[in-house]
Length: 200
Picture 1 (cartoon, rainbow, N blue to C red):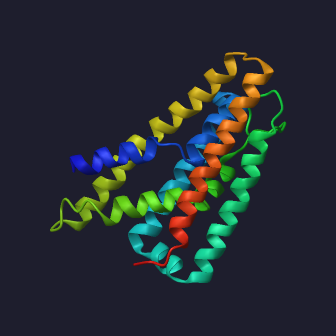
Picture 2: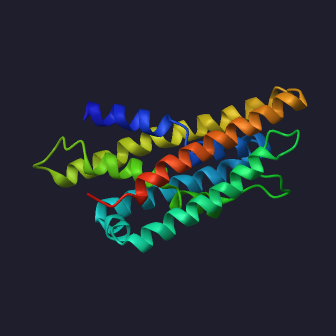
Picture 3: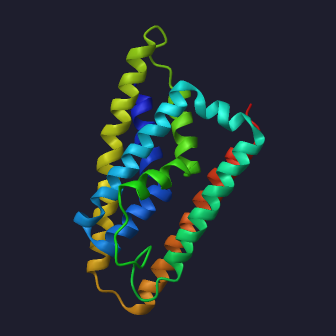
């Protein structure tokens, strides 16, 4: 169980589409207005857990055309977000809009997030610490994952708020925008390419 807990921490805290957008929306709209988006991310993460646990994600990803559609949709959507990050002008913001992202935006980005599928599949198909108590293992894995997931994403959201509060120069802000966009694209391409590989 300890190795699973450590894996959860390191896999979730590493930058991916969810945490990068949480930080960006925190910078754009502030902490309170972005909470509903983070709650949507949490619900979406638990939906992916359910898909992995029930085996539905394996069924979907076993069909090459469905796997391609999922990866293509996620790449297009996240490429759009990355462009918003990179060309946000002199503001550190992922999406320039009068309305902050909401609950359903968070759910959507998780369901097309290739890193989320890769992480959840790794966590729930490996680390079999209670082979004779399947239900206990699944329940504790869900509880441990959520216990780390929420505070980590709230921390990234807070980091975005604090970054915006620094009032950096326009040049520095543009540099951060391009760096965050590049990081998002790298994570998406790496995790997306792993999903495009045929299942073993």
